[in-house]
Amino acid sequence: MNEHAGHRNRLRESFIQNGIEGMADHQVLELLLTYALPRVDVNPLAHRLLGRFGSLEGVLSARPDQLKQVEGVGDAAAVFLSLLGQVDRRMILQRFSGQNRRPSLATPSALGGYMLALSLQDRYETLRLVCLNKKYELIWEGVISAGSLGEVLADTRPILETALVHKACFIALGHNHPSGDLTPSPEDEAAAQRIEAAAEAMGIGVADQFILGRAALYSLRSRRVLLFSAPDAVRDMTLEEYGRRS
Image 1 (tube, helix red, strand yellow):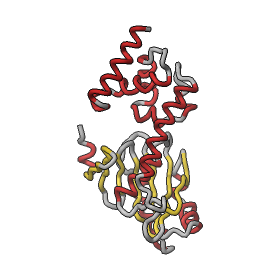
Image 2 (cartoon, helix red, strand yellow; image 1 turned 135 degrees about the vertical axis):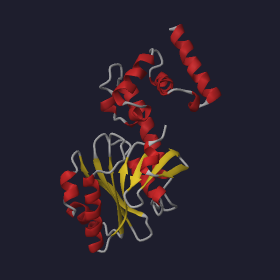
Image 3 (tube, helix red, strand yellow; image 1 turned 135 degrees about the horizontal axis):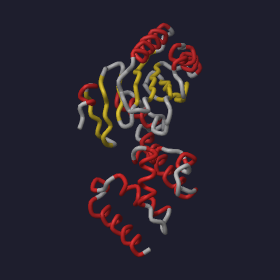
Image 4 (cartoon, one colour; image 1 turned 90 degrees about the horizontal axis):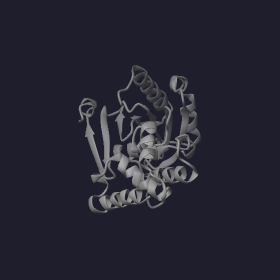
């Protein structure tokens, strides 16, 4: 127990002195777990969680029921880790809220960042729709389809019907690639053109359509990648430049 206590103290001291930037992902996760499991050697558990979910972001984006499937994770640890991820998501979404608490999404980074934040916990391919008023303020957002998007992308009716119900002046769509690959498929390209033509025929503008990754997105309108490397740091680059990142 003394050995484990010493390790926990070293982790805390490392964070105090160097911040999170000086720690590896497994060390950050270990430090977090010490607050949910104060009397347990959390090093093996941290590695099991990273092995199951692939990254620190993947762990904190997982639901409690998913986390509990990992050996050694009970209710306390599952709730604690999932809560941290959801608090982070809420803070991201609140940054886009105006004085009336209605998010203003008038720029590509605001609109894309908002949709990226919404998708953080999506473990499967999901199509999200955002409806905006004439000032590009949020009216409604929600999931149109999850799991398999082929049928809904081929049929624009669910998208347009939802936009009409909410009296949207503009819409934006985003679907995630769980692999993290932002490259649009031929089906993505064809669906984007079909949706834009159908929407504009009904007097609804399409603000943008996005392919959503983990901390980046690809705009089918601008043909550019937006990389969200920090809360207020957004880098604009080509798909090729994004693929060449070290």
